[in-house]
Length: 501
Image 1 (spheres, rainbow, N blue to C red):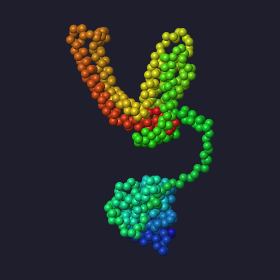
Image 2 (cartoon, rainbow, N blue to C red):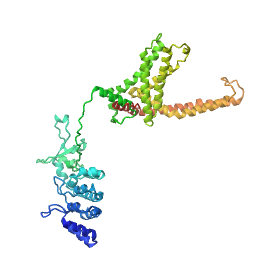
Image 3 (spheres, rainbow, N blue to C red):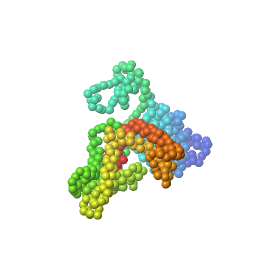
């Protein structure tokens, strides 16, 4: 230890020939011997002072050359006398040690690839948990280099290996062992070393894929301490309370990301239970509004039960509260929540209005209009039809209608502007509008010709063309839209939340 401290001081204070002589002296003690059980690299990493760790990196660069092998790590069962492990331990209090760590990792990676020998990674195998915790970027780079170490004796491994597959039910009864020349056509094959004393099959020579070395020592894991808190079972009353509390929150932190399924997985009847949670609860409100309107139109006297109004008002208030919270906290993601607010608020107001008219018995309000309930039925039906887009048959046409509205929304403003301009030019402010061409002035006839040309011939044909384009786009992309809509419903059902797309 005293000699190592003296060499360090001489290297720091010396120049030129002195430092070169020290490096030549240290190279003699890189490899362990009978007299020196450990390498001088470990002693340098252990005894070098923290205030000059940058110079230690320079020493390591001189000792660990990439053009030749100067240090061959010995495979050990522990990290004892491992220079990399010692540096990682010191790096917790001395961050400057990362330069020396990088030098050792580069040396091990370079010579493992050049010599086709995974034993050069032995210092990394014993301390990769600490390396992953302290320097994850270096750890991932080193793991990536481990994956591409070619096999040295390729022909020997090909002739003395058998194909091992993951266990499956089919292979328990069918002991099939395809030859190695079919290895390129098999999915996820694994070569298991098995010396074969018999003569090798010449067909195996057709296998030309490169083989890479792999070792279980390259796997890393974290040890998670078991929690001391015992899991207490929750009763039905507590479960109901937690469900109500979760519903009252606008935005909960507990969130489940739904898996990105393929289209065929959505045809599985097993997902119906998840969709039914949201579907049946929301459709109760629609059913109440429609039943109230039907009883009012076709019933006699006061045929609408009192509970029907109470249920409609209560459900409407709950859905209105949930939609309001969703619009406030997720406006960008759910930009159509304003329309959903209108779809729930208007039937709610119409139901309250009907309740006041029917149960109020106020003769002064006999002539009040009944149109709010009529419009609420129309709005509820359209909203219900829009929610049916999770159905595969209905979702196709709903997607086409949505695509058509998106394509022609700008055209509607242009069309309305053209009609408005021609209306002003034809009638003005004081001229009455006439349906017959009984006016003799040619200016009126010319304006009518221009109006019919632009509105009937030009703009209507443009509208038809835009609808055809929208139909083609909707017909091509309706499956993706249907999968997304159904995915959002299942995601909402799994979260027990109110996140309607």
